[in-house]
Image (tube, rainbow, N blue to C red):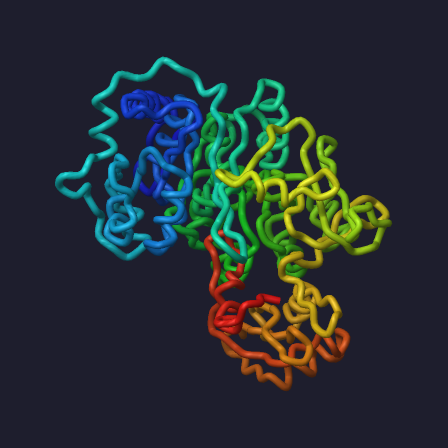
Length: 511
């Protein structure tokens, strides 16, 4: 069995399991059992694992909450989930105290020094009069149970419109658990690289997100050594890889961007030869960025595509990607992945349509408290993650946009991802976001926000001229603005909703 590591702290996974069993007895004493939800308002820390495992031991669902939420957003999630208990870091209480539901037990985790330092604050102890997580669980004898029937986490997805939806799977049968384990093992690289105790990994993203949550918990369950980054910092990751001889990583493309921006002398300073399997997902990776990472780290870069609802359904290695630049891979043997037209029929190779998918044999899901939305997500008997794409003749899937991001201008469909891909090739462009804004004549107009690289002076006329030579005229943005930074979720995805919503404020329509 490996360890959990955070800063200078180290806790054996055996101790984590023992503490989780005590916490499970505590949850049971609160009347929490099968089917209930336990909210985790936590940064990446040891108690995230303890509370997640504890919930599973009593048949409950750990429910991670994005701790960036406003009080209203947190209140909605607490109420919608019907959380029977809340586990929260001490420093986060003040920001959402008014949203804590009356009568729901709140268990407080002291904020440790390395997390406090990463966020520029002082370590925070449990406030007087509140229940301290560690002291509380020590008051119980370990519950004699195993997590074989643990239902997994309820992850609330951050849709572009409306409230987030909690993805809740039925507790898996033994056969369904085997299917899930096989997908996770291959997608995360936990199979084929020696014994679990040989794996050393870093959780680079916040565990309230679906992929880092599944990745970190799966690695710990296997017995790997799991290092927690309080927040992603590129040179710190390189240091960890060298010092701890890290073998596996799960990343998102914005992390690649930030790593590649390090000075060459910094990048050359660290020995990264221990890396065996690096996988990325969650957001599109510009081909020049991925190629540069493969050139630097070698052919250890892998990619999968999926969603919280459908899991990972495609996969590709470095070699496959270099032979098919821009692909997100081929479908797993267990996956049914199709590209369909408006009539629900599968489209021929090369034709663009909506991607629908499902893993055969995996436990089904619903949206917590909203079966109607679950039914609405189904198309052609499969689940629609909301992406637009096509297959090539070799069965490799390519994505060109999000279905819900599509701009309809004068009755013509425009896919922002196509325009963004060209913009990212322009010298001086660090990143960009393209979306639709109201247009009295055409319904929607194309609008772009560009983040220039330091030292580059870009202007609207230059950007439009660059695009006009590369895309059809109707795809060239009517307006181009510039920003020193773009709002992002911690998953790395650009928060387009924050950029788009001001333009639609006060209007009844959104397209």
